[in-house]
Each structure stands twice: as structure tokens, then as C-alpha cells.
Length: 110
Image (cartoon, rainbow, N blue to C red; front, side):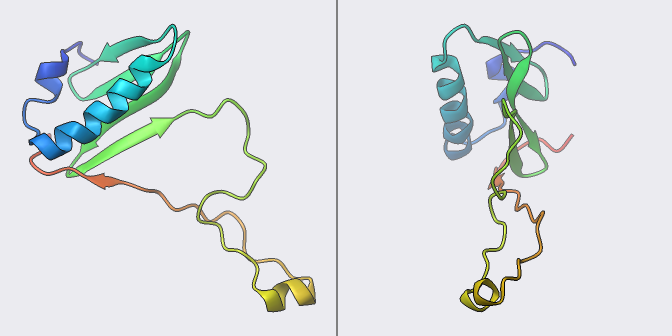
């Protein structure tokens, strides 16, 4: 990816969308020993390797955060057993994962 600057990455965003991306940036930069890597299409944060990144795809702000461990709990959005299923000892289908996105207006599409 081509190296870029924060102002180039955010040039086409309106104030509301810039605030969303800036909140992500401010949080990541508040962590100790973090390197910011700004590219033409994304911003990433790393210590030894990238652990968080954000990019704009169509009209969505996509944020990825690498977990430090495997998740043993049900993923967010997994169905919970109904009282009837619990009484019968049956479990709901597992593996359901809902992906959250934030809409970004005025974003570049290419």
C-alpha cells in the first residue's frame, strides 16, 4: 500500500464521518508504544505487527481489531437458548456472527 497522510486519507469525509474515524484514531494513539501507519486507503496501528485497522469501503467505515486470544465464549450476536430449549437440553445453532458497520457519507468509492 502506498504511504499517505491523515489529511489525504480523510480529505473527502464530512465532519460527522471524520469524527467517527478520529475517535478510532485517538483511542489507538492513546495506547502505549503504538505506531500509526497511514496508507492511501486505510489507517493501521501496530506494535510489532498490526493489531487494529480502519478503512472506508463504499459508504462504510470498516474497523478490524485483532484479538490476542481465541474466543471461547459465543460470538456477539449468537442466538441465546430459549427457556424451552434450555428445559429440553437443546442448544441453538452456533457460529452466527453479526458484523457491525458504520455508514460513512461522502467517502471515496475507489
